[in-house]
Amino acid sequence: MFKVLYPNASKLKKAVQALSKLSDEFPLYVTGNGMDIKVLSPDKTMLAVLTLPSLVFEEFSVDEETTIITSATELRKIIRRASRNDALLLTISKETDELVLVLKDRKTGIEREFGVPLIPRPPEPVPELQLDLPISFTMLSKDFKDLVGDLKLVGEEALFSYEDGKVIIRSVEQQKEYVCELREGNPLILLASTVEKARVSYSIEMLMVAAGAAEASKHVIISFDTGKPLKIEYELAGGGKLTYWIVPRM
Image 1 (tube, rainbow, N blue to C red):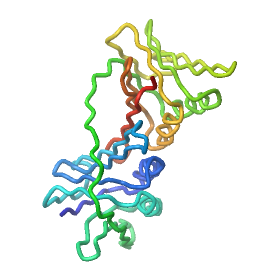
Image 2 (cartoon, helix red, strand yellow; image 1 turned 180 degrees about the vertical axis):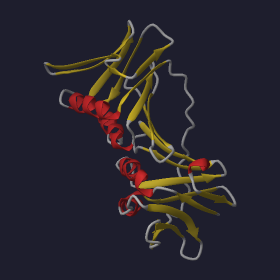
Image 3 (cartoon, rainbow, N blue to C red; image 1 turned 135 degrees about the vertical axis):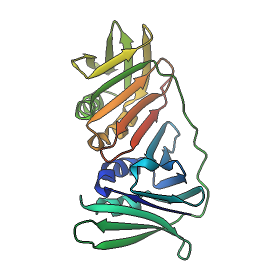
């Protein structure tokens, strides 16, 4: 099966907490390349993927590729108990049919072991998204969270547009309007585009879910294009990446 040791369990707290808001179950995929958690929203309008490459683990032993489903709520509760000194050991117990998690305190040597029952069915197939999104910008995660919070005060749909070297995000509903203009340096850290114009709308509710992971990373990278899903990427401090895909609204 597998036995892996992630060096800083507390660095996963915010990512796991954010993912658990999208689904009650965590499909876990372990291969020789690393470990992924892929969560699809019930209405299939949002996909979230937590990617942990093998190189970010202190120990990584995989006998065979493994795919399991476990409770998102239970996993979140356990990870939430991790201190900044804890490493996280993950393995499978065939005797109890559980995902075993061990929090190992590097200073005291104390180990706390937890078991989460496996859900006895295969996960729903999840698409591998590899899209060319020509508009991409980087900003502080805090600024992104604040922006989405402002959008939520106005409506249910956010219009993303790009033209003349700037991104404009707008929401209009019932005589209320919110407009945010984003340029490189104000407040964007980077802005790049290979197209002259783009225009697409997304659900503000789904943006709120993605913004809930803002504390997992200092920066966020956002990419989009006309008629294509929105991509939101957080680079985790402890290593790894949390990526959200949001289907456009028609």
